[in-house]
Image 1 (tube, rainbow, N blue to C red):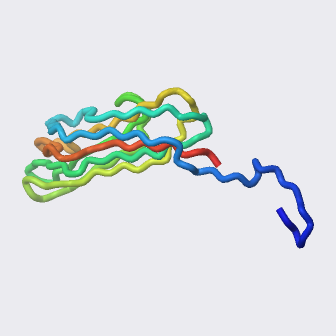
Image 2 (image 1 turned 60 degrees about the horizontal axis):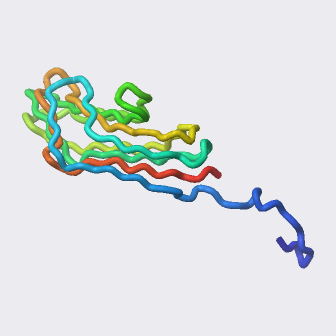
Image 3 (image 1 turned 60 degrees about the vertical axis):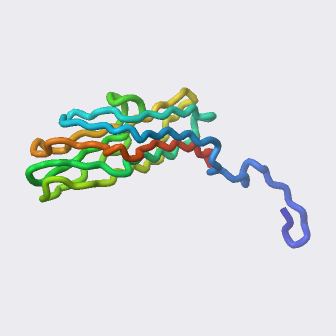
Length: 154
């Protein structure tokens, strides 16, 4: 570093950048999944192994189109977990209500997670009907996915 022509020294660790994407993992499916239960059903998982316990995981999950049927006020419910469906919920979303008999919805989860480990981490996308008057929810054979990105600590 130059200061008006005088060369100064600085420790590189103080100025180096962080926030780089170190790895990306993606899992997706187009298989139709349907449920008439209010109990969450796992529909997709993806795993990533952080290279440092201080790194973050940008976790993105979504269902492109979900249909729900109901008499009124239909709702669908989705929870995104670190671990299996009994693990740590990192995001949840309830969609609806709708006054129609059938409606379509889009579910998205976007989370910056801090697992604080270098052990493999599994992320699970789940969904269920969101109310007792909702008769069923289905993924309609549409695309749903999980994308995991390890972000270097800064």
